[in-house]
Length: 86
Image 1: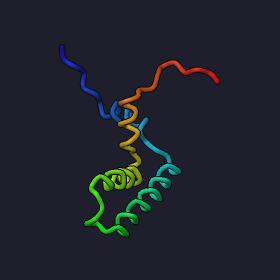
Image 2: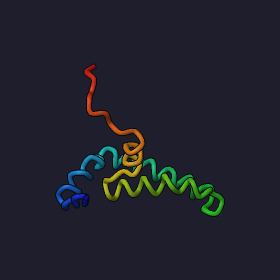
Image 3: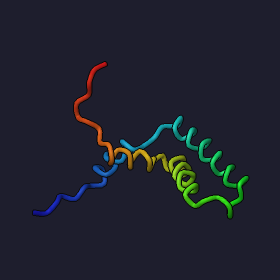
Image 4: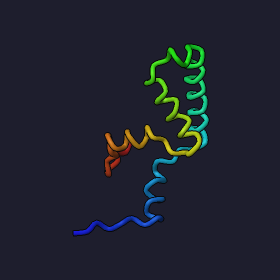
């Protein structure tokens, strides 16, 4: 059986749950800038390559509004359909 292909409107609707707001963009800008400052002060040749991953992810989130960390965490821990009242 063939899988139905998603239309462009369906893809946009699916991606809307990963879009972050302006306050989170600002937070990622500040956090990413601090990480890049630390890499620069340490020396680009001395900093380990793993430190570049969150710095690039933060700036990607600031520029596009899509947070890769949010996508990965929701794939690992999917939200339950039932919500409990507090």
